[in-house]
Length: 292
Image (cartoon, rainbow, N blue to C red; front, side, top):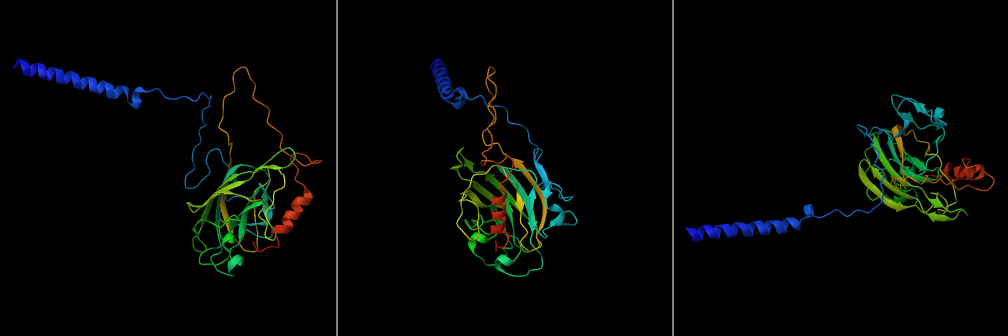
């Protein structure tokens, strides 16, 4: 009996020692590696319901009016949606890096084919187009399908719904950067989800999405979001945008003041918030009469 007792005692001690060794070597006993970067606390954002705008979004169209759009009075307003008419419309506010949500519906009555069917577009910074088209059983060139980076990159898949049904575009856009001499430092990038499906992933935009010549870059600052009228009565609703700060917030040391924000690069002789009229007119000439 005594021998059994001692054996069980030593067995218990061995198990305890083994358990301590496992605990010391476990992640719970290790110290977390700390980067030393003084991150600021992420702000709280309340998500919207049913594709509605989050609490930090800028609402561009809620079904009531198009007051924040230049030319919005030229479009037709109906029961909570707008119909493209007469001309392109542009936001009065200028943007750079954004998350943009747009809902659209092509006409339920099918007319035309290819680029002549449910054609419109979303232009980031008034230059870089994500195509809107009725791509339900509608053949066209791949770089012109719905959700393509127009004339540059086709969507990964065709995620279009039938004509007349509401569809969503979630667009993540990183604006291009230019140096003080107006040379391109980094290109624009686009990620697009159509109806919840990833269709464009981190595409390096080659430049302005021209129809009739190769893409190119010319220095510019923040610019409007543009919705295209291409002759088809495409419907729009529930449009909102979030301005994105790409670098996470870092708390400055207490004895230092935060650095002043750099001025936006601008062309010589223009105000910082003034778009070059000749360039804008040229871009409109490129886009308006083309089959995009």
